[in-house]
Structure formats: structure tokens, C-alpha cells
View 1: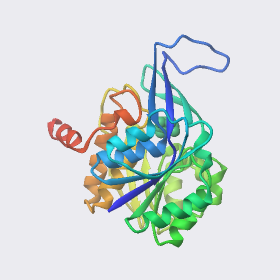
View 2: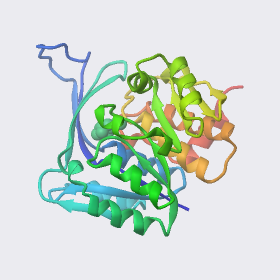
View 3: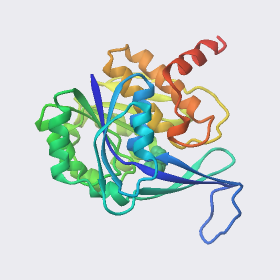
Length: 298
Ligand code: RIB
């Protein structure tokens, strides 16, 4: 079945630097590149490369230099991607010598998503699929969650970047909450363990997919937890690793693969993505991920 990613599309302007700038500091970048990005676009491409029938909805500017073409070339359905006046979303990204990043994003067209577009999109998609994947980089996010539930669709929410919009969303309406440990702490102001206990107590029907960076990930459903270690790789650029994980997780889960395998393959895909520069362009295809896993020692 088709999977809809309703999310952001950005042009990522990436500076490779020795270290992430301190306040007031100026440094000379070692390299510069312009890549396709945005959490919505990255996740849609990860879905498609994991073998799903991906749809994307959202907005790009009429100036869109290459994002729609890239999505189409990948095979992502762009029927619900609107062109609006004003600039396409932009992100300025510093990537340091350890592959860590620092991102500032300007929403541009991503904040032009209207309620009308949301209703039309969800009604159109509802005939093709059941899962809607969301992040927090577009306008009217709480409305999308509410309308998706109203139409009987399933919601996977990645509360990234975390901000006050999240307080407007009832987590009861979220079928799968997929987030990292920083976002987990921002959500409830506690550590990862307290976050999981609170989710189990207050939102027992919301499945949780918590990623812990180099410490792996934890999946929790009805209080039962499953752990997966992270694969060790030499990190070049961690940008988009979470999006790669999310797309793979959703694609394999929707196909009904056993959860143990879903976690393994999604973790391997995310690990491979950090060995390359860029966000969307670093996402591996499924056969490459499976071949890499087979070649691993032990
Ligand atoms: O998750 C990575 C993405 O976050 C980047 O591609 C950037 O555009 C920001 O949206």
C-alpha cells in the first residue's frame, strides 16, 4: 500500500567545517555543497528506496530548483506537492570533522501548507494507503493529525524539530511516535527511561520508536520493549540519518516484516547513510543495505 509523507522540502546548503561554530566565531569552511533535503523529502526518498510506494505532500516555492524533479525521478508520487509563491525552504548546515551537524532551517514554502490542501490531500490519499508520516517542519501540523484520524488513517509522528506546536497534539491520536532521545526529553522534560515509562502509563496505545544514536534504539508496544544495537561505522555526515531510519522503519513495518527485522534493517540503512555526505543523496537502496548486512562479520 502507498505511504504518505506530509512534510518539508528544503535546499540544504552545507558547509564542511573543522568544528561547529561558537557564538561570535567566524571560520573558513573546508567544503561547500548544495543538496536536496528537508525531513519530509528525505523520509519520502527513504520510503521509496526501502521499496515502498511513497507519496509526498507539502509545498515548494515556484522557484523550486530541483526538488520536484528529484522526487519524480525517484518514483515518489508528487500529485499532492504544491507550488506556491515565495522561496522554497532552505537549511544552512554545518557538518564537523566527526560528522555531527548543526542546522538552521528557514521554512519558506513549507509554512504555506493550508487546511484546504490538507483536506484534499488526505481524501485523495485515503483511497490508496493507510499510513501518514509527519514531522514538525510544515504549517497546520495539529490539523493534519486530527484530520488524518478523522478519515481513519494511521499517523506516524516524528516530533522534529521539537517546539510548542507539539503541545497542541494529543499523543492519543498518534499511532507511532518516532523520535530521538533529545526530543523525548523535550517532550516530557525527563530522561529516556522516564519518557518510556510515562508513555506506557499515559499513552498505552501509542507505539514508541526511540532512537539513541550510537547506543541503538528501543521499540515499545503495549509496554513490551525490543532493543537493537547500532551498527558501528565511520561517520562522515549524520544529517538525514534519522530520516533514513524513519523511512525504512515505516516501509518495512507496513509490509508486515517482523519487528526484529524492521529494527535491524532500519538501523543498517541509517548507519550506511552516515558514511556519505548529504541527507537525501546519502540514503541507500534496500538491496545495498541487505548486501552490506550480509557482508558484516559474525
Ligand atoms: O533531518 C535532516 C534535515 O533537517 C535536513 O535535510 C534539513 O533540511 C532539515 O530539514
